[in-house]
Length: 189
Image (cartoon, rainbow, N blue to C red; front, side, top):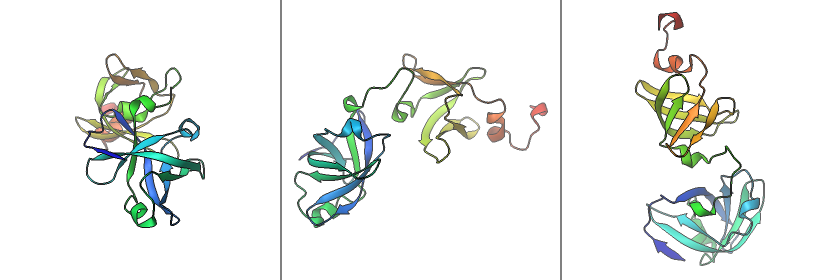
């Protein structure tokens, strides 16, 4: 176990501890991933217990329970009382441990803070966050006229430009007007 006051730059959010499991210091955790497979051989992770400090813990055991849920045994956490202190703690890994993506794919944390460009309108605003919704994920975009929610669907995405960092999209006609000019007839704009 090694504490280090580090910023979260260079790290990605892997998941969070949901609760202790049993009396031997095990933890139940949810990983914010599509598949646990790339993380099966994980040797260590960083835990944010309080404040901004990340603490590195060696993993003694990691057992999948459900699609994205695991039971973790971390070095130095040997009883339920110590495990209870990690309830709701967030789990982090260095960016270099991200699994490789296929061409055209990106991780959500890569687009936060980037400009969103529409092929017709140019720069629309800045991506504030990604909302993971049951039907589809949605971008929350801070625009000069207010917040706009943009469906994050393949049909609208043209690609992530990593050289001139921005997310390029083909937004549906009138989407911005619904948010930025509510109640106005599209012909009046």
